[in-house]
Amino acid sequence: MYRGALEDKRDRMGGPRTGPRGGRGFDAKPRRPFDDKPRRDAKKRPAPLKLRLKDESIERKFRVADGRVAAYAIGRAVRERGAYVSSVAPTVTARIEDIDPKDVAFATRLSKGVAATWGTLDEFIDRTMSSPDDIQADVRDALRVSAYELVFLHKPPHVVVDQGVELVRFVEPKAANLANAVLHRMVEAADDFPFGDPETDDAALARSCAFPGWISRRLIDELGRADAAEFMRASMGDAPVFVAVNFVRAKVSEIIQAFKEVGTEVEPIAGVPGCLRVHGAKAFKTPRIKRLFDEGKMLVSDQSAQAVALFALPKERPARFLEIGSGRATKTVLMQSAAYRRYGAFMDMVSVDDHAFKAEILRERMESYGIEGVEARVADGRMLSKSFDAGSFDAVFVDAPCSGIGTLRRHPEIKWRLTASDVSTLAMTGFDMLIEAAGLVRVGGMLTYSTCTAFKEENEQVVDRFLKMKTGESFVVESTMAVKLVEGGPDAHYAVRLRRVR
Image 1 (cartoon, rainbow, N blue to C red):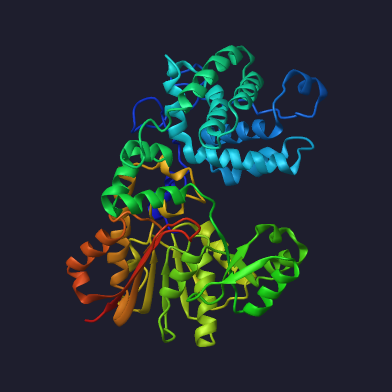
Image 2 (tube, rainbow, N blue to C red):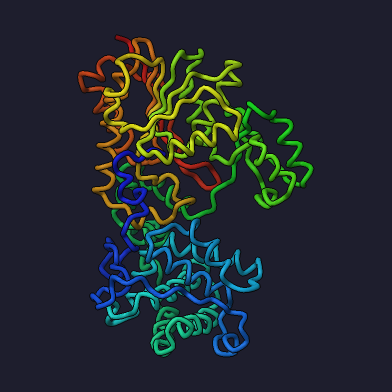
């Protein structure tokens, strides 16, 4: 996804924010790193975590499961670095000697859950403390793990308390007694969670789905309560796994047969040629399936992303196609693969991003997937008229920067780092890019605008505003695509296809 000039904020959602501040009401604000009180060594990086849990002396001293310690360490790294669980988890678990694969899976599940419920956990923890701001940040990291197990996984209270105390003892021995008291209060408070009826109380609904209050209210206002509730509940689940067949190097039948040989069922998705839902991601670890990836015959991509790539493709092969916001080139691959299937040849394509390293990624991926005809360009998507002549493209695709609220199952950290002002800034950037892109489309050509968010401010309102501008008067809406987020379904995406008529 293209993030334009906003990417200097550490890839938008990976910036300096460190998680929500719990205990300050329903609409909590982010906590400071470490404690909320300044420290003399606040600018110093904390000492590396030493996770040699298989050392016998440590095992005798701390009776805490490896998976829980790893989950704590992952959560701490996410908080300190503003990172994502998906990028941190493999590194952390690798530092635990002889860790069982089951503990790795448990740690990943816990850490993803904590990231998804971060602010709700803080509010819950703070309800059990008289001075929540005084707790050390690393102790809070440990308590979040226990709170998640208690509130969202419904683990037996005695297990949560016992393991929670030991986890805090591992982190900070002096805080073990405090943890014991807090954990017992948590057990009592858990009986009342989410502190209201989710069917009638909007705040309780938000807590039960672990959503910040402002996002929950916004979704309710824009989608209606029933659809908003479905969206939020679905965001708590696991994302289904899809792969896209690269038609340049493989046929659908070949990929289906390969999965069948390793005992995994795949389901072709109607209306999206080459899109397969994989029922059992363990197949990806088998040599047979790994080889397909290595040979560039398929790639992992959500169904909605594949549908958007197909949606942006003209019926007839365009003489020139412009992609604005190539990112890591996934949609570039998808569009050229679909073009090869539809036209029997690649498109003459220019792909733009505002970061040079992404242009290099694009070139590498094109080679990996056997794709030709793509020129990588580095430019600001809001100032392309300086790089290209007016009306010089038959089709233009804008993969706009957005909040990513439709991809929360894959990036749960987003909702606790996002602010309403971020949404407005992203929507304005998307609008500026759409205006700029419009001038590059020839009369009779096609302009597609796409996001992976459900907020109207980033979707319909951007398009409506564009159509009311002088530039937009030359375009008509040809088709709109809006994928809702439902349990077990693909990510929420939005796309609109516009035709230049004069």
